[in-house]
Image 1 (cartoon, rainbow, N blue to C red):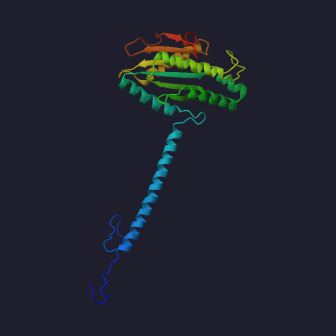
Image 2: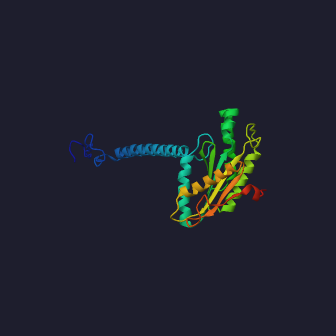
Image 3: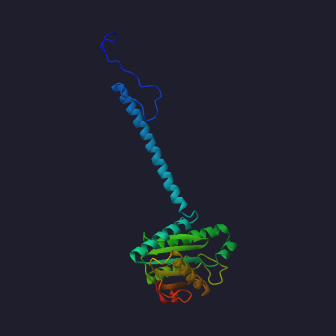
Amino acid sequence: MNGENGGKQELMTPRANPPKGQEDYSSLSVGELRQELKTLLAQEQKLLKRVHQLEAENRALRYFSYQDGLTGLANRRHFNAFFDREFRRAVRENTPLSLILVDIDFFKRYNDTYGHQAGDNCLQEVANLLAGTISRGSDLVARYGGEEFAVVLANTGAEDAAFLAEKLRSRVEALSLFHKNSPISTCITISVGVATMQLNQNDSPDSLTAAADVALYEAKGAGRNCVKSAWPFDSNGPKYPRRIFQDTRQSMSLS
């Protein structure tokens, strides 16, 4: 268009407030387009930064929702998810899975004697020792509830699991956390139950948990401060309470 505009091209502005996503930029000059692009890029960077912040916050929330606040170990929710996943993996790969249940002996008496703060410190000491002893990344140490802990050992047979359980027991005793009102020792001790399964598709996580729980009950009934193992079984083998329990404290030596 020439004439009264002196030969310069007349530029039309986009219509006011077009629907979002339907803006018409065809009538903008090159300089205006560049400015619009800078604005859009700045907005995109701002949105990306916020997305990254939200992702980091979500990761933190997931982490803390799976962590026990007192001990820093995995909590029961984390244990349940991990145990279920490892159980299905063991079935799929036809590998053994072992579960260790740990209970601090006469912990209520310890709390009543020394107070809840001392009890919390005791839980933290025991938790740190358990976590420091279980070193494989494929395993999990969790606070199972109260003064009870659980250890999931992937692809681990009965003898190795029992050996590790006895190591945990002896190391907790070696902490020498004084407990004047324990009827079995002058220090904090633990009772430990171990179960190992060679799994198939007919099994469920509850079956292994139940076996470890029965073994823990046997350890308490045998005077505590000992390890009882429910030796390997599968869905075709004998079911507890007919299963044989062995006291690993007397049968194993540790370096």
